[in-house]
Length: 195
Image 1 (tube, one colour):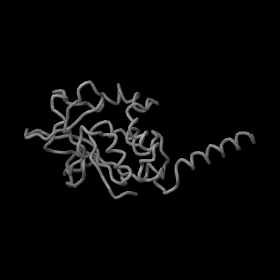
Image 2 (cartoon, rainbow, N blue to C red):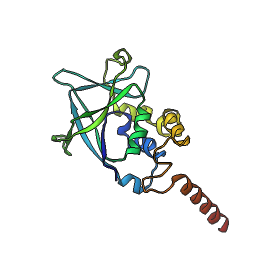
Image 3 (cartoon, rainbow, N blue to C red):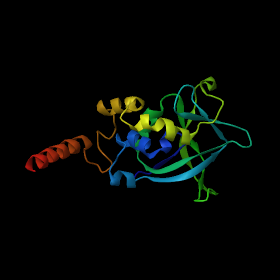
Image 4 (tube, rainbow, N blue to C red):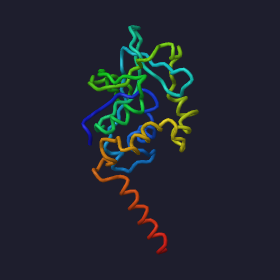
């Protein structure tokens, strides 16, 4: 388990999208799933907006008294995960320290924690006025993000393929992922021909 954490407020609140970015698949192993701890959280002092003509949002600081963003607090991230997340978020966002509050099962605010999140640093004209809606994303857009369309993950995938990945292609358990996938495929072929 990694020692890093993050607050996510957009597409990365969907475990399938988060897994696709950090593991390269929307269906990771149970070991990979178990190394992440995910909890609801609330970040005060920010407002969430839809990015113009995009499926995803951005947050910006706000002095409004009702400024808050609901999201997820994820623990167990590694330096390699963070590297992939930075690529995924791109240069329109900056990773900054924030202090969201964890939420209990009833939605009541609990402990404040320190973590990082991605804040919009591009021109605000690139943001729509209205709030981005996660439930609408799940209902109407997520299928495109997890259904085999890899367009949104292209930069991360290319960097990993070009071995710019600081893990050298190693998975969470330290094994070389690519070689394991080849070995597992070979084993499946042998088992399939034996039946």
